[in-house]
Image (tube, rainbow, N blue to C red):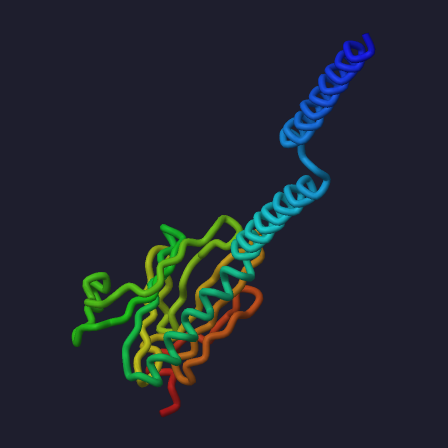
Length: 208
């Protein structure tokens, strides 16, 4: 009787031990279906990084589309053309298209320049930019008295600008600005307002 009771007790003990082991094995398995605090923090950090990068990209686009950024880029393009022409001896052409609200920079590669059909002048287009609504081209005035509100060309070579004049633009508040091109000293500057430049005088009015 004593042996039988002891065997029964030992069997019950082994049964309880096996149940505890199975229960202990189940706990880590169920734990794999959840997230720890460290894992959640890592996920939050990654999402925050992507949000910050998106904001930086958006703010960069907004700054690029401002009036100041666009008009300064046009001025820099013209200054770069004049400097490069003086240093390398090449010829460049700035194309102002008021109808399309765009401008381009062409590297003139041929020996001939077509005055009546400037689009046929051989060359390679280096820059082509379109302006937004907060930076609008209005008209172009040349220092020989000719103005246009369609298409205009400013050409520059080793000896300087072929023509001087001004490019008039409006900002988002309809305030005018003038990009002044000086054919004598190659300088291209941005000035506030629609500047009144000196118009050429007839030959009869010249003192010499």
